[in-house]
Length: 424
Image (cartoon, rainbow, N blue to C red; front, side):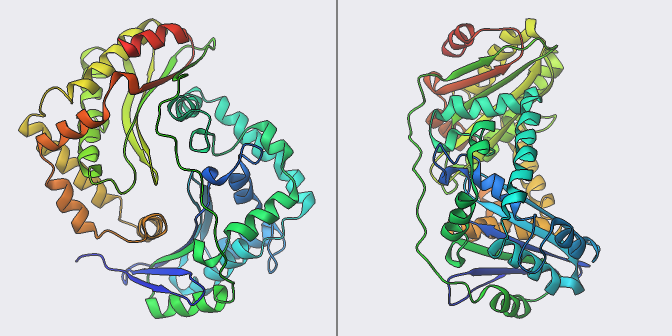
């Protein structure tokens, strides 16, 4: 049976999407807010993420962390949130007969946070510890450096969490201004999936969020298209492994070539059947973990590759990876390999939509970021229609030696050596 959803809109501009799953025992409630780290200036870098923490610290109806947590967990549910570059999402999942509670808790958190000054100070150290934790994980830190190497000094290239210094300088008025500016109904999407119906969700949305006033929402800075001059960043550490990350600028969320890129990425670095796994790990034994991924934003994107290698193998691994990347723009993908990649991409896409939470996440993010929701079967049809010529064409469009960026955390190479390597 094909998935279906219904979309509605309140008078104040709040968009509401419901994905009924009558056989589910749960309902997932998700509030998407159209603000992330790209909306921040340098002084306030990390504010969206810090605010995400603060919304769990108390609201008007539930004035403490424990009151919020116990309301959802006392119903057998879970709650969480995350911040991205272009949006923030607050979510919970509860037994389907506790939908009203789930919506009440989230709505109160998002629009009526207390933002207590003492709690802000207490949480500041927690957020800074989270930043330190990422630094202490070399693979994660290589990804942070890669974003900077790929985009340079602009909001899309900055860390979502900010720095210890920017987090340390944020004050309560920054949080209040942020909520008043961005947490407005015409900049939000309520996405609910599970054992419920659209009429009930619309009624709940009107009661809990209908009184919010619509306001103009500022835009964030477009991404500068040029690759930065400083496109290689190396942080030497005396650890056992070199954590390598490579990237090329890719496509936006709505670019027509995105399906071809999804198949290309599958051929290159998704799963044990991918070229990178077979060539880098199985045939040459250069790395235990290697793979590729695609991130897409409103006006830009990245194809990124990561690997953990022995320092003495860093040069060889980098060369092999880049050879596999550029081979895609030089030689057509054989028919059997392409068919496997299409099947893998379609199959994993279908399997990613097995739960109410996954369904609510997909349609909510789609509606917020693009204004529409692409039907699952249309995505499948477009993936299945990708040809070898399509893959070659998108590779030739995106893959150029002067567009490669790199980051390394660990021993094994200097910035000069890596710059020469990616330019070769």
